[in-house]
Length: 117
Image (cartoon, rainbow, N blue to C red; front, side):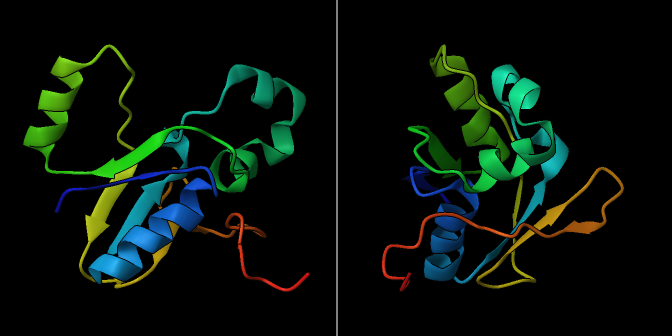
């Protein structure tokens, strides 16, 4: 499966869109998610949530095989970070885990355009 989406509404929210449309799930390792050092320094306790749900990040999230990822890494000077994998066992959802494999829960998953305030 190869897909791509910008993460301007939040990484978790936009990854959920991919999972739901493709009838797959995603397993994300929190420790692999890149977080800007200034965000860690100023928002340490909330830095992971900001990185995963904050939005307004003009980055691309893409899914692809290891072979395609290696080709993309070789073709660009942009950093490419593998943060998890697509799975067939949790269709339509994203599971976020810590370094021990325990599930993590975020209070927020990203921007929701049609949610009533």
